[in-house]
Length: 185
Ligand SMILES: [Cu+2]
Image 1 (cartoon, rainbow, N blue to C red):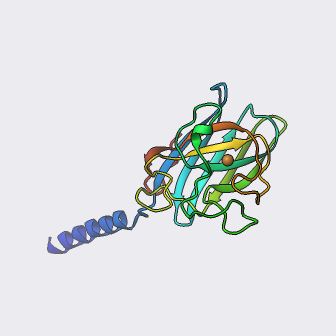
Image 2: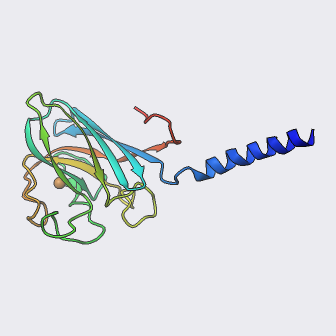
Image 3: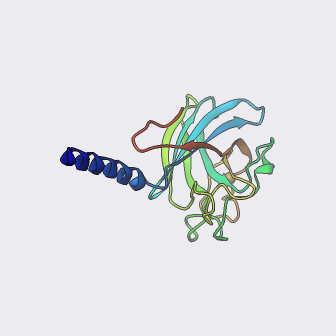
């Protein structure tokens, strides 16, 4: 009896340890991208990892071609999306991965297919979904994801000469995931 009890306690201790060992960084977020007419053109699922935030982007009915893809500093997407503010830049750097560390919101250009679709995963190591971190996208005024009419030249400050903003989505929290559970859809 006492051996059984001991075993049970050990089991409980193991479960507790496993729960504590879950990464504190299991935050999830999402953004629904809309064009200037308000039509939904894609989704982004964001997941905190120990190496940054993984963005899973899925686009449809977008104009094909090479287009800039950024995190912008304000979580507000009123067409024509000037409301989203400049690039998310908590480190106060100049724009562009070719001119230094760049903005935290700088990301590689998207190459949207002739079908208007694109599915891609991008890791942004410079941002966080964890509130309170200096590079958290959930700061006082939130953040948004923006796609531009032109490609980012990776050097022109402050916006990479990327032209108009053609799609925008506010980054919203979508709850914390437990290890092994599938991302919410
Ligand atoms: Cu931008």
